[in-house]
Every structure is written in C-alpha cells, then in structure tokens.
Image (cartoon, rainbow, N blue to C red):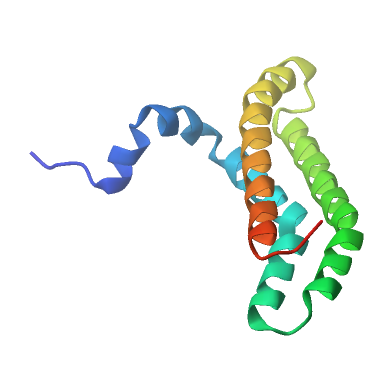
Length: 127
C-alpha cells in the first residue's frame, strides 16, 4: 500500500480541506491583496536597497496607496464579474457561490494587505 504524498496530506488538514475547493478565490484574493499593498512592499524594497530616503519613500507611499487600493478593488470587481459569468449569469447560483468564495477571497485579501502593510511599517515607512 502506497502512502500519500505531502500535498494530499496537506489537503486533508481541516482548514485546507475547506479552502481547497475555492483555491481560485484564494489565488484571486492574494493577488488583489498584493496589488493593494504593492506600494508598501515596493517602498520597503527600495529602502532596503538604499535607493531613496525614508522621507521620499514615505511621501510616495502616502500618495500612491489610494491608487493601489483602488486598483485592487477594480480587480476584485472583475473577479466578481468573472464569477457571475462562471455561474451562467444566473442569480441564485451566483449568490450561493459568492458567499462561499467571497468569504475566502475577502479573508485572504485582508491578510495579504495587512501583511504587505506590516512589511512597509517594519521597514520604517510611515503611511
């Protein structure tokens, strides 16, 4: 009898087994979160490389954050439209799917956005 590999074992974990069917929502949420926090991470990288002063980076991050957040919201709206299309433009299946996928995507988005913001804060960039 063969023992299952690492990935099948991870998929059987309680939290992962509930999220795995919505992996596209997880990917979309993480992607949108990274877009929303890209200015913070980018500022931390530029500061870490010593390419600019903290004051100039903080000024850029402060001015650019609303645009990056808006871009991530536009991407999430596009994802909602894609999900609506996947359900055949039918409202009842879309509502059921949206609740399940929306919770996953929103959670991952929040965690990713908070993580990228923390990276910027850890680098000493004020927002």
